[in-house]
Image (cartoon, rainbow, N blue to C red; front, side):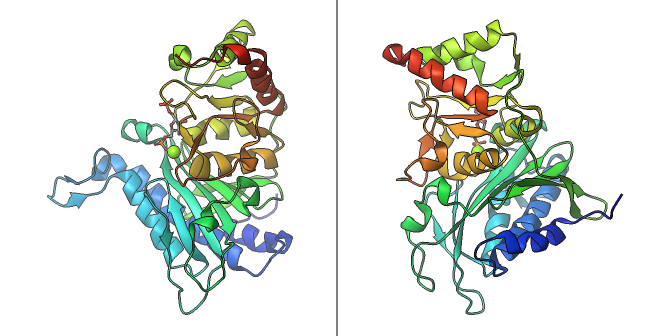
Length: 336
Ligand code: AHM
Ligand code: MG
């Protein structure tokens, strides 16, 4: 067996694969890896240091403590802001984007979008959560403040995307458009090591992942698709953290669906921070990511930083089935 490869070594080795290879994207990915280690440390200590729960609480020593998702948000901003490679960020936790000033008069070319801690409803109960990120090249002129057009790019313009899952192990998975690789954190040495090379998603599988509790809030096509999964005796797996559900699907196959529903007619999940980066990763693994009506997620026009979309993502044959059911019952698509 060869020597273990660290995330940093791997990123540097792969730099030449990238069309604009100048080391900037490499440095940016490394900074995100560092932020992930900080977030991981805090996620692991959350129960001990009492930073779960609501913001603005005091801990037992009377210090003000921060909610974990805000902590994660701050670490991402801090590491990206000091990198000198990122000129602007947009986060699920912030209303508007933030332009970042030049660092040491270096003008950055990239903007980063992220969900600092996905799966917030699971934080307090020790169920796995994750960080999702996507990187675009800016479209406005280098050296000027970023504009909203830099963020309103379709997902197909992403130059890199990734996620970190803080589960039984902490795993960082990323792509720069040449396949997908995963790295597991060895906490004893504080390094991510290459553990999952060139991940490929199974064509189909015996798993489906959807919040079936909302069955009656879905349209007829979605209800019939769920009935179909039940008739086939497929196994339902739903963690309630998109990152973790999709991470499982990358290896075991299956489909993750967050449909349009009466409470969220456009779907609940965010296009920029959640769906686009995960769609790039899944497509790079040979999977598919569409709306529940079959439109490719990465082609969706972005008109709002917090735009929502429905999503069906995972094994290609299963994502196509979702579209077939939507088309077949289109005439009956009434959300009650
Ligand atoms: P969050 O970013 O506020 O955590 O919300 C997104 C999460 C996803 O990770 C998950 O798939 C979904 O919301 C679960 O929603 P629900 O509880 O409605 O099924
Ligand atoms: Mg989220």
